[in-house]
Image 1 (cartoon, helix red, strand yellow):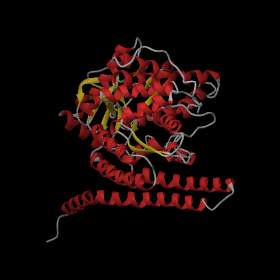
Image 2: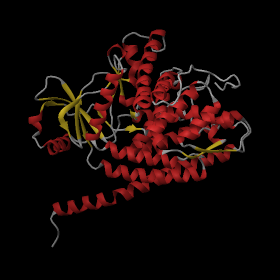
Image 3: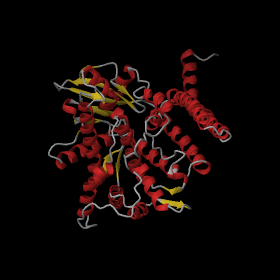
Image 4: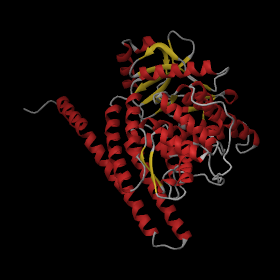
Length: 475
């Protein structure tokens, strides 16, 4: 006797759900091997070409091909790969062809249908949807790999709120993606890149697991909001206020903040008759960047608990160039010893102190190997590439994995997982700096904060900034 149609469909859905991780893994590896293989082939061909212009043209063509393939991988698989696009799609890290393609993926994650959103909200809050909201916008204001955000108004409130709702089933697929990325990272660090990438992916795994707990996110948001309030007369950034009693593991209701996404800042300036590359715009951008990095310096060095995901989609520019920092799914609490060791590194980089930089890297737990004669200089340059936002004159791309990188001369054999969130934060802040057309050193801005943190811990005496006279200036 044939099965009823409903049972057949249910069986198909269950089989599809069971085999989806395998299918997803296969798609990743086919695409990843294709991208990697095309670059290795280009590298081999370029080695036989003596003419520099011809070699550059070959690489430009390869970057265009690679960018399209990477765009297809990230957009079609979604999930964790949309997060990868946020990291890679930065003008200081990836080839411009990649940046132009990957930057279009921001807020391009598929959205969950409103019917499913209603079911999630009702299940989490044990109330009828219409009993909670006076109105609820059907179209989300933004959708990312883990959740989407809707603008709404509560029955009990006269102001608008942002409702963050988790995508059902996203967590399982994210774990599949991270396992594949970890395997690929192990392959790359064994055969191609002299850097402990696996530790970075392990820290990423922990952060992603945290992102699926909105109760934890709400606590983090309130902690950072209160810290910045008591630390400053006026907080350098705005943090949304959590609505009491409206938080669950899969739904988070918070204050709605009006503003312009930082990536649209130049367009907004043009609409208001302001030259985006003029002096007035430069002053506004400098103020925005200064406030944003000040907040990060205070969070990382004074409290050790910080927002670890400052990609452009999480930053709004509000009235009077005030900055709002959104999405606290990725936060990091640094151990005390690591926080103070990083404070020492910040001072060493700000002072261009090569021996102190080497000692600070050792204190942080970075294990390096080198056979070059100028090891101190290469370690210092590597530190700047990883942990400062400054760029050499005329340089706009400063990838840790570039051909001229110190990683080709100094290997990083062990990189502490706990430090990856700091590394990622600095890389994203540098991307914002380059994107805004500014030159800025967070190490130099953070030096007084680092000095204060060390003084409070009884680690150093109060000394003025110094620059060793023996230093050959790299920048």
